[in-house]
Length: 216
Image 1 (tube, rainbow, N blue to C red):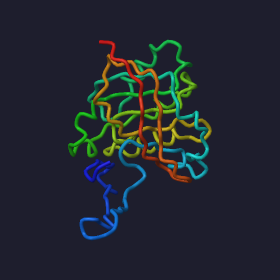
Image 2 (image 1 turned 90 degrees about the vertical axis):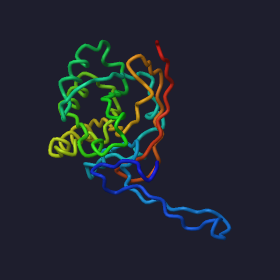
Image 3 (image 1 turned 180 degrees about the vertical axis):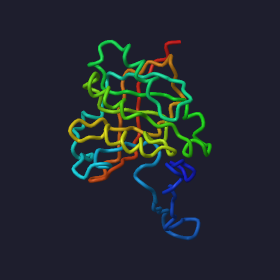
Image 4 (image 1 turned 30 degrees about the horizontal axis):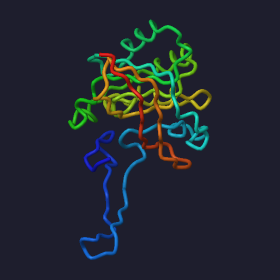
């Protein structure tokens, strides 16, 4: 993360406070970081929208390892994405085998621009319903928008959060992924999501590792 890392609504920016500095005559460099838990590539946990929702301590270590990843790209002008994703999902065979869905909207290409956080695309709550009905083993939905909630339509965004994160059958949200290095010719063989293990926290910055093969 950097101090210019975008944040939802451009609030709760990440910044580093230098507590001691060798350059200023101190024995060692020591810094504090100030941020929201929802910054950079991060997970939304069920506790984000439910008081009784799960946090990181409720998931087994193997939960974070994914061997069957469904990845695709879409193009849309819609601020709330729905049909483009549902149409692709409808055509997928062996739906029950997939453990993780990653969607590239192209938003990652404007990650340094103001409209990335100010006019970000959101996702329809109906996508959560469809995944839970037809893709019963999906555990995480990842994408390159800064949030599942569009900043210009937060009412729909709140409902999307609630549907995905419902503690009875949660699909965790992996928001603000930088997907610039992968495209439709990329085959993702394995993904490991490595969140900060912060107990009782509603969001978790994380690092995502992927084993990929370019089929070009």
